[in-house]
Amino acid sequence: MRLRTVLANGDEHALPVIDEHVECIVDRGHVDATFSRTFQNETKEELEGVFVTRLGAVATATGFSYWNGEQRVVGEMFEREAAREVYEAISGTGRDPGLLERTGEGQFSFRVAPIHAGEKKRVELSVSRFSTRVGSGYELRLPAVSERSRFHLVVKRTEPLSRLVSTSHEIEIVERSDAFEITSKKLLAKSPDFVLRYDVPDEDFRLQAAVHRDPGHQAYVVVRLPAPASSAPVVGPRDVTLVLDRSGSMSGAPIEAARRAAIGVIARLPENDR
Image (cartoon, rainbow, N blue to C red; front, side):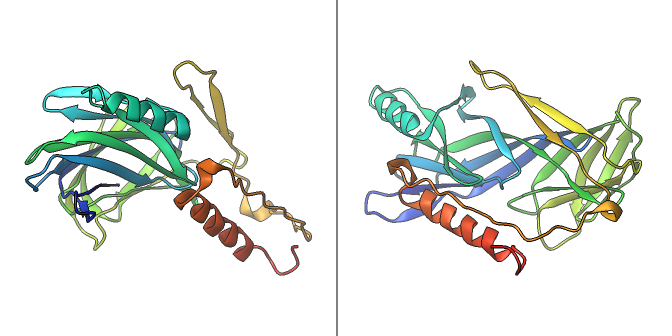
């Protein structure tokens, strides 16, 4: 995640991150994470910032907000074209808009204005996703910007858990009756990303589900059913058809991202697929 802006002379300027804190709740492999980052406008100009983040295809943005001093402004989530229209309308009224739009596969952005000279701008993004199943357990990887990034996780004990370890950080684990509370300490790896691994009972075909509801919309359910590797069937040749949206809202970066995704899909197909 980054916050960038375009200066009056056309130069693009990335605002530095001076603080990052991540709060995370893990339940049966499902993750609700909130990334809080504070950016610093070190220029002498009033800026409009563009906050950009790539969540990956398996993650979904569920909410965002930003701070004007001590005041928290909760953003709204719109379809891309509607978001731009609302943003332009609000920014001309002296109010501080914040609208999230999907700009590509797994990529989201929103604009924040104004960012005053010398101002610290805190931005918060909520994300929903599943951990990655690895062997007899799970691996959770949370992106970070620096070795000073702080992580706090609550791993619920809704199923037996064992061998909670981090391959990236020294961690402190507080065992509660209903959860393990984990706090990151010293960074041990070269990458600042936080990685947590833990084992669960090896139950094949265990059904997992998570419910999500956007304001004003019906709820939907995300379901995952991992199959045991030993019973993986032999898959015959497949015919694969890819359909790309070429409407006006896909111009620029979105269509380029879609093309890259299509190339990636084709590259992963076995030789006998068509």
